[in-house]
Image: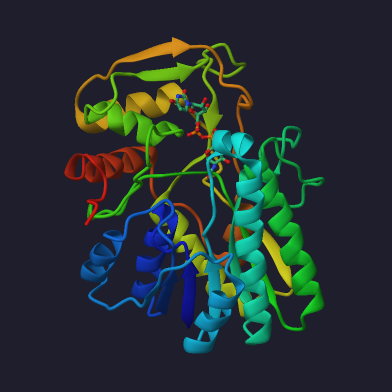
Length: 340
Ligand code: WQD
């Protein structure tokens, strides 16, 4: 298939672009580099040995999106593009709603006009809200979220459900990611957060490389084995493979819209991940336990049964792999991707 990847220069998008090319698909990227660097493109082309067409504009621009579909022959869309920082979304909710909803609406409009009905969407486990039983299952209702960022994911899932119901033949996979970490085995691409990292793994990696003094562990008084929060960490290469599996499954899907959890099915605590990282790099790192971070849930992980049974996909990489691959990327690229 010829796949339009929105946000293809970003962390998960870039790994998925490589997985698609390895599986014999063609890729067209649309990305405005709001939260990524153009230099990732050169790395993707040298790793894949292929030229990757790039369209650089903001997808909320309906006319430009329309023109892109006029110019390129597209069979399917994987839609990653969006703002994703939970805390920032509380401070600037309008930007989050305008961008995450607006980009999806103009993509869907252009898809409908050009008769493209295959869509894979980047959703998040955050749509399970605060009350879902653990492990999370896809059939849980009602969906909700605790931040404007999370609510954009719930809303886009609803928008896509309505759009797919109204357009004959549309097939939409909603991929609910748990906690993506790790990097490509080459060490050439990986997560490159701008500013101070919000998420645990990139923060630990920056402590290890000397960009941060120490890790602050947000609370060790949770009702978990070691008192720190447990999450379902998933290697970004497993996650990328999940997108290829979902894309290739779309035509066989009975329902017009289907959510799939992409997670491992096991929880790992903050301190377990931290100590695994220390083992991967062969030295101890500094940390302090500080107060809880507002909004954090004690522990959750995926029930990944549906993805295994219907997509034939499951995770194969361990926590140790995630740490080793993160370190290869971070140590080879201490400041992330170069500017030019
Ligand atoms: C993991 C654990 C923290 C940083 C969030 C979003 C989710 C998704 C991924 C993406 C928690 C603890 C963290 C630190 C710490 N969004 N922690 N010190 O919160 O599970 O999920 O990111 O697009 O929607 O909610 O991930 O990596 O931020 O935190 O102790 O410096 O690590 O308290 O328990 P989270 P995270």
